[in-house]
Amino acid sequence: MSSVDQPSGLGTSGLGTSGLGTSGSGASGSGAASALNTSTRSLLCPLRLNGKRGIIFGVANHRSIAWACAERLMECGAEVILAVLDERSEKRARSLLAEREEESEHAVYQCDLRVEDELLSLIDTVKRNQGKIDFVIHSVAFAHLEDLKQPISQCRQRGFLDAMEVSAFSLLSIVNACRELWSESASVVTMSYIGAEIAIPSYGVMGPIKAALEAEVRYLAAEVGERGVRVNAVSAGPLKTLAASAVPGFRKQLKESGDFTPLKRRVNHREVADTVCFLCSQMSSGITGEVIHVDAGQHAVRMQ
Ligand code: NAD
Image 1: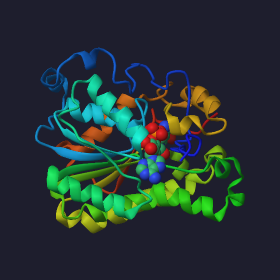
Image 2 (image 1 turned 45 degrees about the vertical axis):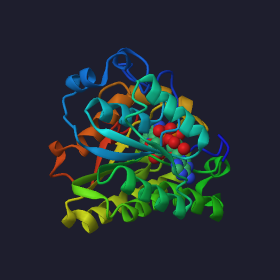
Image 3 (image 1 turned 90 degrees about the horizontal axis):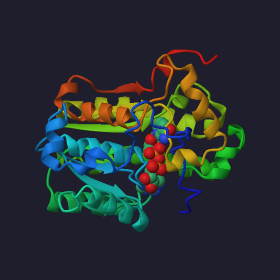
């Protein structure tokens, strides 16, 4: 898969200068927090996730929302298992863990979600090596660039299906594959975008796919709830990531989007990761089938 094809987190969103809102903490593994050891970082975290373990899909680099989630979850004391697309992502993930001096504490495995056997093999490995899991973060999306550039009615059938397979169907596959691994109160979180709810022309084919993903959240919540498993989505505001950066026109959108939110700014990676962390904790034990917007209120107002 080329880096152009990788895209689409299509978080439609994209760029911006820092993409990291006011705090500037961003998704980077560097900075003050990285200089602290694990136990010190854990003390600084308002949520305690010690003893919790989970799989995070979607770390491509230091800007990935998945990496921001991984950092926050590790700071809260959780053990993370990073499931990454390919060898290049694996190298990056290992070096990000190494920067934090945590490479020996958290596993990294490759898993292309288009290949059923790779997912089954990953889950089997986790079952043997790690055991039960308390959370899964699904922070994965894909669309071919050519399908994003087209008016949606001209999206190729193959392109639509490819995007749907990776970006939405994979959540169903993961929940099914994990059915023997859930702990008593496990939590699944996926990443969505406001383009699921309203038409954002530049988001193209990803809009209907995110709408399907959000519907999956509700249906999965209904299916696995009696086992104590919760399923939710975080609908994030635009963030500068690899996937988002590939979307045509995204830089402009990102630059302008902060002006029109109630908070008069964009969100940052850390704010999105904080909400994911909350959804993985018992602090959110009554929440399932929900889509929580972490977008500085963008969803609630009409852009001027
Ligand atoms: P990203 O490029 O860092 O993450 C996308 C990930 O999907 C990458 O790690 C990539 O390797 C992975 N992926 C693609 N195809 C795969 C496959 N076949 N198997 C396994 N993994 C595969 O970008 P991101 O912005 O962090 O995207 C993460 C999620 O957040 C996506 O669902 C995206 O739609 C969503 N989101 C992003 C934004 C934004 O502005 N960046 C906003 C809202 C929602």
